[in-house]
Structures are given as structure tokens and as C-alpha cells.
Image 1 (tube, rainbow over the protein chains, first blue to last red):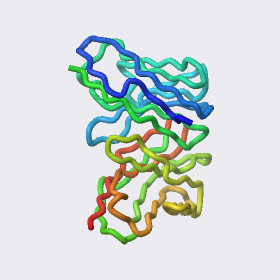
Image 2 (spheres, rainbow over the protein chains, first blue to last red):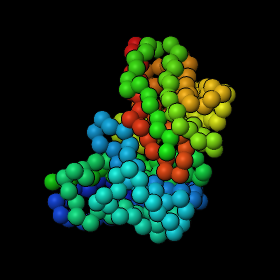
Image 3 (spheres, one colour):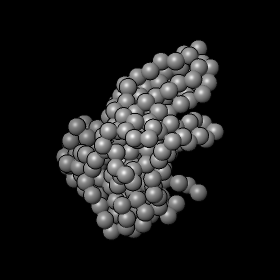
Length: 110
Length: 107
């Protein structure tokens, strides 16, 4: 099993550009999450999805949108990237409480 | 939402037992307590989970007092490879991480 996969691994954007981070899990988990982690800091929850068809805001949702495409996939979209969104983005899934994390996407916005 | 508080950092030496305490004063009745470990450039990894009293696995022990307002992660005989950030979570739907405890194990 691949577990949780994320694409891309690295991305550089210019201010104002848009992009979508992809996440997929093959563990048949109901819940999925997006976090960001700034250097030397803990993880902050951006959005989560408790089940297919539902999404909810976390601590820092501004500037992001999400789509729970199906049970396997949960994508994160930056509509107009800003330098403050430079971070490492982690996707996770759980069922019910133990979370499994992907390898992360390192995003730089210049 | 239950908020967690942990020490920012701890130092230890190889072979010692390390105890990291997390406070979660407004934990809800149906909340579980989960601890994760994170190495640089990796996502967090599950260590242990408990609801009350004591839970032990091959890696760690988790002690939870009767009032459940705190919990203690115990790592027996740490090695250099246990140097990492440790996070305590109180499980509710949105799984919020705190700042974590940065453990440094010295030779």
C-alpha cells in the first residue's frame, strides 16, 4: 500500500499564481486533512474533511479552498498565491483517530 | 475545543527515561489523547493513543490520570535517534496540533 501520497513534492510560484496540491490515500479512511508547517513551527490545520462530501475550516483557512473529490482524494487550491503561503504542506488521513501523513509538498512563493 | 500545552523543549542523555507532560484542561468525555513524533522534513508519525490510566506499546507508555486533564508520554532509555518533536493531540474532529516539544538527546 502506498498510504498517503502528495503531488507535487516541490513547487515554486510567483505571487498571484494559482495551483492545486493533490492528495490521495488508499486506506479507505473517512477523514482527511490539510496542514501547513512553517519553519521551526508546529502544524496548523487549514481544512479538514470528516467524510466524503463534507469539508470544514481549520485554524488558518484564509487564502485556500479544498475539494473532497471522492473518498480517496482531497485537494488544496491556492487561488492567488502570496509569499506568506510559503510553507510545507502536509496531507493526512485517519479512521477514526490515528492519522497517517503524506511526505509533504514544499511550496515557495516569490 | 480542547487546547493542549506542552513544554517547548527538553534535553536528555542516551539511556535515560524521558517524560513529556501535556495539559488539556477542557478535554471532552469522548476525546482520546494521541501522541505523534516528527523528524525534520517528514510528516508526523503516530506513537501511542489512550483514553485513561496507562497504555504501553513497544515504543512508549502513556499515563493518564483519573481527571484526564493531563497526560504523560514516557520514552524508556532514549537514544540519539529519538531526537525529534513530539506532539500531543486531543482527538476531536479537527485534529489540531500544538507547538510540540522539541526533545534533544545527547550522547
